[in-house]
Length: 318
Picture 1 (cartoon, rainbow, N blue to C red):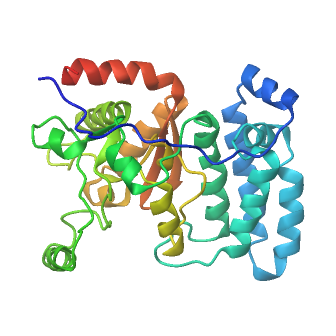
Picture 2 (spheres, rainbow, N blue to C red):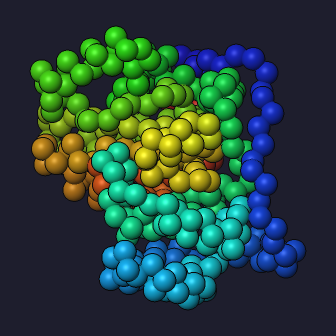
């Protein structure tokens, strides 16, 4: 079966936010050498231990001094310098995020340490895809030809994973609330996806992960559940206003990141299995994985793009 893009209209003009200025020499170095991501993740882990020891409100100055020193370590600085903001922009954004941080039940960052971890590990996404255009508006997400309609595929049995859309009306939200009261554990406790659209490579990735997860778990285990897909920058800022730990720039707004449910699978004895699968994909260089508690954030590595695009076209006949 040949799968159309299900997109209409001409390709909109989509532009990335202007990157912070860097020296020509720095830009050439980034082009020549990819930072050591294992070293970066190890350095971030060490940094988080020290941030956790300075988490109280009276340690603000000590935390800033610590970050000033540790972010300049070569393993960390190399990644931050390779992001669109550059080292200084990424550092200042992190400090601002920390200054504004207020814990709340919506945020995946339960404390300052979690906030720093989510921000720093998600910088791998924007380093990988620093030249990708940002989807600035909801309209751009809904009309861009690189985005495929998941519902069209789902109805034809072409998706191995599940998701649910956000209710668009008050009535829809009321029905969702009633269902949760009647069957509180039937589905993950998530608002659902605003956009039921994804890049072809992401669809192939999620199908691949879902099938591996299905093979590795007992009969009766629910399929892989996706809680977030592509987002517009417009929507990302709305999430920030609501208190979510929605980082900027974000791989979601580039169309290369998704979130998958983790905590819900604990009741089926399958959470650790899924975690092992995802971390193995990260070790193989295919994904960047960020533990955000209830859901884990995944970003596709550019090196896996060609293989997954071919897998999509072979599977879908497109």
